[in-house]
Image 1 (tube, one colour):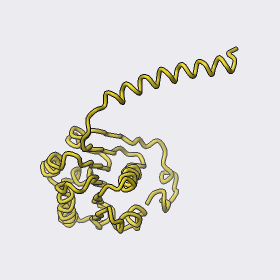
Image 2 (cartoon, one colour):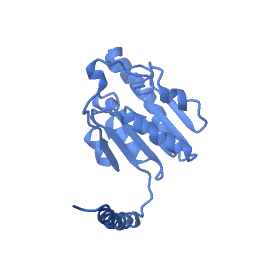
Image 3 (tube, helix red, strand yellow):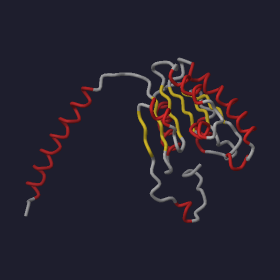
Image 4 (cartoon, helix red, strand yellow):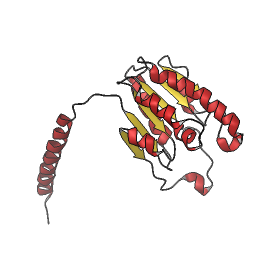
Amino acid sequence: MESSSERNARHKKAMQRKKEHVDQRIAAATVDKGLVVVLTGNGKGKSSSAFGMLARSVGHGLRCGVVQFIKGQWECGEHLLFSAHPLVEFHVMNTGFTWETQDREADIQAAQATWAHAEALLKNPDIKVVLLDELTYMLTYGYLDADRVVQALTERPADQHVIITGRNANDRLIGLADTVSDVTDVKHAFNAGVRVQKGIDY
């Protein structure tokens, strides 16, 4: 049976090998650029992750912009926290969920008016992080022109980061992204009849 000291020695050697590998990868990463991060999938946590990155950015003193599509009728904690922050410009489509509005033409008009704010942020070199929350739905439903969206993302300032959230991110968004996370729905309390919870879900 392996002794504690033998196990500790084996662990140390393994961690030394791991450190060497990680250090090599860090040394090889020499590019600085603005990233496009896409958080998609059916699982919970896409917007939560995005606003976590926003909090980090604000913590570093970066100017940020937020555009929220779909949401707006609920009193979301992220809006309460960031909407009045001097480093954050915050815009909300404010129509609520599409299955509540049930008015495609009105949703298209609202999406296009809201996208105008996003385009302004994506042209502003002083804005270092732009969060486009639930943008994927606007493309899936055809509320926004995909060419126009891709062009704005492609032509943004070189050091500007963009975070995009929402289910079913289309291939064009995934193709231009630098980082893509597909959040899997393994288990969700709502499916067991639990109401959405303040601070956890909104």
